[in-house]
Length: 170
Ligand code: ZN
Image 1 (cartoon, rainbow, N blue to C red):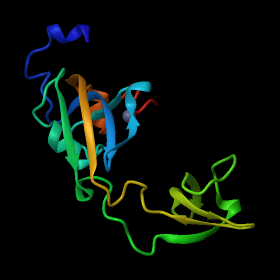
Image 2 (tube, helix red, strand yellow; image 1 turned 30 degrees about the vertical axis):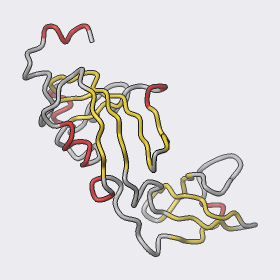
Image 3 (tube, protein in one colour; image 1 turned 90 degrees about the vertical axis):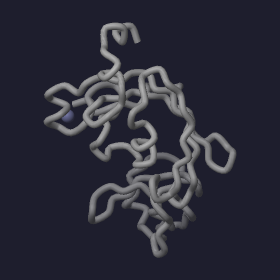
């Protein structure tokens, strides 16, 4: 980042209300399952519960340019798997378009709004889904490259989230 030269060391240190951008690679059980480097970096504001707790904790006090690996247990990640999260849903409630294949994550309309769920089984009129987050109950290994750290703008502070590519764009 070209403009980091003009920032003070404190401004480049991650703490509450700092806007952080980073790339990550995520592994689970020794297998890489996500790599953000093909997309925009992740952008978030520290201290507003908009990021996994385990990542916020590990990034606190870190600086732009640093790289770190973080092990995130379920309780600081996507939570433990809940029993009873499997349900049968009429196909007409599926938002996701295209061919349905077991194992994929689909969006379904529920009384509480759109929800993501893992597709277990496809029937004629219904599907069986599990509304646990696909990464619930898993120990996650993140490899993080911190790209930039900056102070939040007044707008971002009043909204409670980061603005820009990778964050909220509205
Ligand atoms: Zn906003």
